[in-house]
Length: 132
Image 1 (cartoon, rainbow, N blue to C red):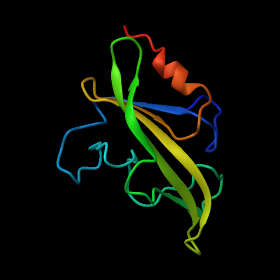
Image 2: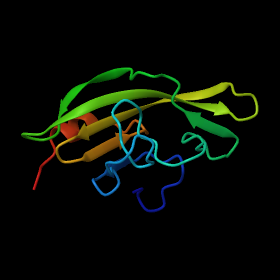
Image 3: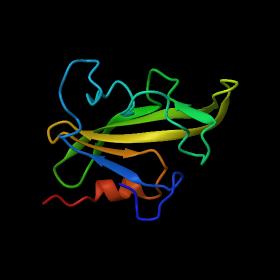
Image 4: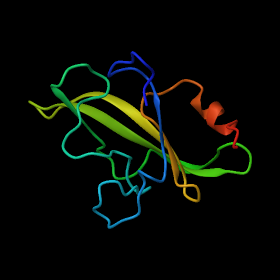
């Protein structure tokens, strides 16, 4: 969800739950795998950093730039991954901009937190989360 009035380039965090993170065959669209960045959908998404449609978006690396575990509030530990992404010209295939998509995945709860906007202070917010 994005805040009201938020455009395409507005910073926000995705909170994805078990209804989206369905178990299924390896090629099932909504199957989340920690071995690749979360990118639901088909086709080439437009670059999240621009308002136009001339640049596409991709994750060129097969491995995350960072991985490990992170606390998500008291008593919960997430699998953490940070993926390097890039925007590229759909005309020339050349990289135009870069970004990092951070993901906290709680496998027991089947909850995924995705930050592809570089939300300031999110590490501390996630670490201090309150569970009810």
